[in-house]
Image 1 (cartoon, rainbow over the protein chains, first blue to last red):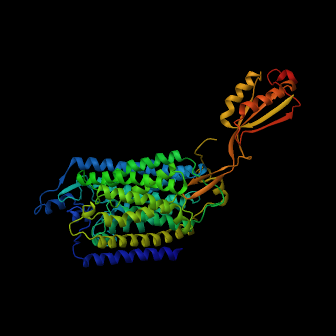
Image 2 (image 1 turned 180 degrees about the vertical axis):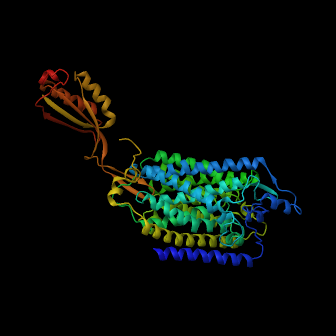
Image 3 (image 1 turned 180 degrees about the horizontal axis):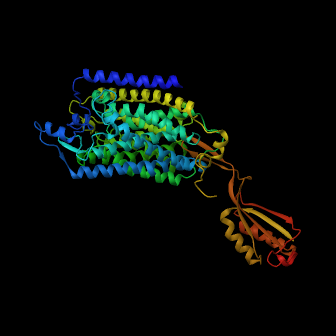
Length: 473
Length: 112
């Protein structure tokens, strides 16, 4: 136990050290990361300029402008992402479990989201967006030190800024939803305190570095030119791998494969999926950081890809099993949303529809054929939907960003090169997240124990872990 | 006196109640139950997982009647609850030893 903790701390220390060295060795990152012509500005959405510093810098450039419309849009977007988590994701997941575990899932989602939000303010934001670094930023903004109402964060347009506070809040919701997503993999059998400890560890050692590598100033994948507009790798693949590793390590539910574990309320699952869809407009279009044409592209893609995925999943079920189900349509919506997340800012609407359709079909396989092959009890199919959809979306972003296919890529956009870069991002995220998750689960297992007792599991987590029941009998 | 219990299809409950009222039955007890017979269950599919639902929802009614009325009651239930398809249910008849009306303390046929 102690040795593991020690090696983990040591590992992080080394990583931090080497990053600092490498960051110094690396010249200013010249990135054509995002699709907008001002992509370089994206590279450093977090390099907020404190007011005094701005005045000195302003000598050479015009003073940055802050548009009230952008500020309002970012506040609305942030609220929409919160809507995705509580109640959206909570209800989507809650409806899928047995009624005796309903509250445990709602509780895990809500508390994990809140926990990560607080950690984000304490050190998360600083490590992800607090400055330059190849793998991680630094602790300069620990406890949001130095951030005031006058602090500004970059957008995709040069000279256009948003208040740093709203950027911090917006990004906090992303960290929160990512950790909350993992809950679906080990639902119905995990100890509540183990969920919390795991979340803290995984957030610190996997979410923060991956978020920084993809979005942070000087980040490794950003430098490579990986496209991830709203978090396909950072959020979905990252969470899905942690979930899959969790499903293996926590083990199967008692009676899995023998007893019926049918969802207790697909009505609530549908309500949750719909709230996710609505909230996702904030997630995707909000990731544009400005209320302009780029945001409307992300917006329209979020609408069409999702609709296409609902149709594809339903059609796939009807053709394969004879009946199209409500759960299928709801799952299709989430699959489409996941797949369009990395692509929404750079593909055209027709590309979005194709991505959505493919996601619908492929994720249907993800929760049936692939799930059987993997042999893990991923209770609510976090990997089947978020992992498969996320990987597909990340790779197809490299295809449909091509201007010839309706995307916003530059004239010299190379599909094969971009798909290669995308694949690298996917692979790094998968490996990184899995390794961190494995260690984090091990630690949680040794300190607390991952599973509840078999008796508690049979009785239900609501009454045994939280002392209450969802529905009066 | 007889106690007649019948397990029927849930949507037939209203017709059965009407038929029983018509022949003068004063009260019945209704319970929602689950079970299986020759109708068997069905399968439900949730994403990749398939579950066989063995027990189907049914309604069980219980009627306590005098011996004279028993035959009529059985016939009324039979006619009202029949669809002709598998799963229509069954009628069970028991001998009833004693009945007490709690409010007045009446016993036997008086209490029915």
